[in-house]
Structures are given as C-alpha cells and as structure tokens.
Length: 113
Length: 117
Image (cartoon, rainbow over all chains, first blue to last red; front, side, top):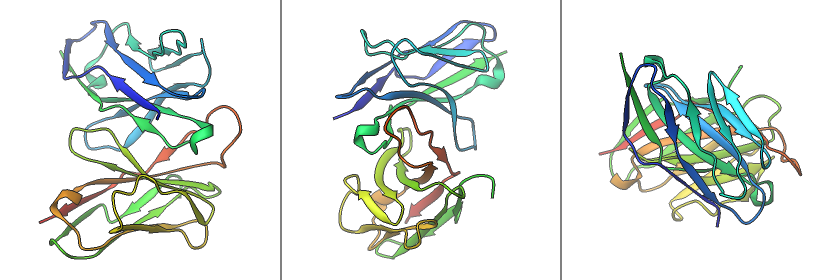
C-alpha cells in the first residue's frame, strides 16, 4: 500500500541555517504530495503541496519538488527562523485510493536564536 | 464556521466507558475523514465518508470503533469499551468532493485529545 518515510528527528538548527527534511514515498498510482506543519499547541496546517511530477510547492520560504524518479519530496528552506520551530509531516494522498492521507511519523524542528 | 471544528477539545474517561467525538466539517465539503494521532507519531487514517456513507473504514482498529454521518455534514466517532491504548488525539478533516485528478486539499480540525485512565 501507499506509505511515506521521512527523516527522523529531532532536528536542531541555529537561526538562518539551511534546512532539509527528507521524505520518500511508496505509491502504486500517481499521488499528490504534501507537507503539513504542526506548531506547538496548534492543529495541522498545510504548508505546501505538489500534484504531479516535477511540480514544486512553495510557501513561507519553504520549497519541495515532486521527484518521481527518486520517489522523493524533500522539504527545504534556505534560512530558518525561530518561528519555524514545529513538527513537520510529509504526506501523500491518492485519488485512486479515496484520497485518504498517509502521513510520515513527523520531524520535530527546533531553531535556536 | 470558517474551519473544521471538533468537540470536545479534551475528553478524559475511564477504561470501559463509551465516548463520542464530534466533528463539524467546513460547509459544503462532502468528504470527511477521521484520523488518530498517537504521541510522537503522524496521523493514522481511520475512516472516510463521502456524503452520508462510509466509503472506506479499513483504518478502524477493531469493532469497538464506529463512526456515523447521518445527514452528510456532522460526523460522530464512537468508541465503545474504551481501553488505555485508545488514548490519542483524534483528528477530523474535510475536503471538497473527490476529484478524478489533482489533489483535494484536506482541512484539519484542532483535534480531540482523548485520555483513557
């Protein structure tokens, strides 16, 4: 079945450092890929998405490119801020599988000033 | 309301009791999903409704779990004979009707934190 594997955390960075959180997926069809973020004490929020191969999702300085050849959707940000501290979830959904979302285990990011 | 709402926000119960968790989706969203998020884990799919019917309940862990959506809007997740292992955050999400291509973004509620003592 469909599944997502993402880099284990926690990740601790200094402010303005470069961030990469790896995510790879397994899917039988052509899923859409997502990054969700969960800030402390808040619910899940969509950060960015990509619906087909080679699409790049971007938001708030974060980017991720849908790579079909490597089945990956790595999250990157060039310069992190303290306010980016949160848990990040990679996820996929497949319209041929009721669109239910399959999540990775989450990666906790802490950015120190 | 503007987003998905869930009630209660917190529920503490004793082992063996029955609980109901409620989800109010975004108005006009025909698809509704329930997920369970255990501590330190990603959300795990439980059940999906398209309209009033459960189109996929393959994620429900056992027959103590049941969900309904009688009028195609509000949904209730019901857990019988609760066990300590049921303690988790239960998330609800809604989206527009399932399309045949592209993504249908799911909007998540804040969750209900269930604690079984």
